[in-house]
Length: 298
Image (cartoon, rainbow, N blue to C red; front, side, top):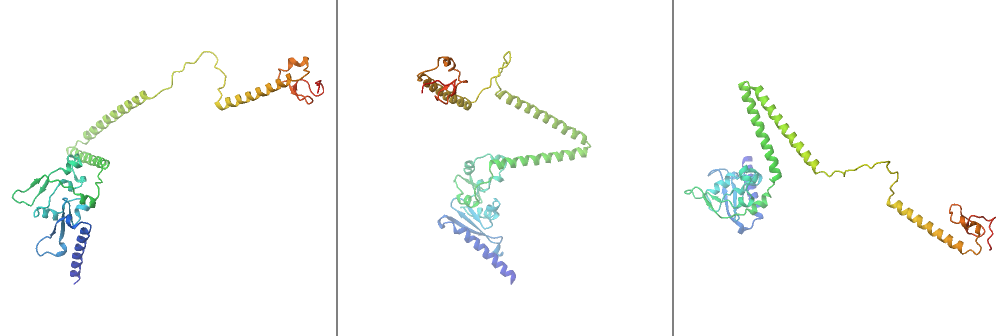
């Protein structure tokens, strides 16, 4: 009884999975639904269902095409029985392509001929009917095998191939007793590669130096260098403002001196000496005299 209940649970699980796959697919978009089992009289929970769609896509309850990107044996069986089933290389993700097929673009892969196996007499019939596989691409997602990832994978493959050849060459040299010759060959090859890398590095450095912009040629003049200090723009502006203020003060002082009624003749020659002029406390004028010696008529 426990074994029968397990079989019934597995059978119900397959039916549930089929209903989930058909839930988001319109009925008019479905071409055929096939039930594939190992042999007549086999257990019903071993049965797999293959759904054929109008755009050339197909879905199988084993989900091998979605999970691993490989055509399952159930779809191959349907290919031999149904005229609505076609095989095309674009059904397989690009990560499984070899180096020659990987060079083709996506449009070239879609334009490749379709293969039909339902006609036993003609073995394989290629048609020019174009399929999009839009529903399959929506379910499986976009191709993640980008050119950057492809480059990394190619480097790993080359490294694995080189390691394989190196191991094979060492085993052959060991069997023939020529290990030293093999090691010398490797040393010579490494030395030649290092010399090439050095030459390329020197050439790149020379090119970079020739492209650099150097300082102009400076000719040192004869004699003692000037001691003058170059002032900044802010310092020059500050001095110009200070000079203009001093000029205005001197002009006002000169006007006040000329307006005086009795200027002293003996002090007229000293008015231009700004360092000696002070403000008189009596006449309130800038002059050489002070409050004691002031003779101005107030």
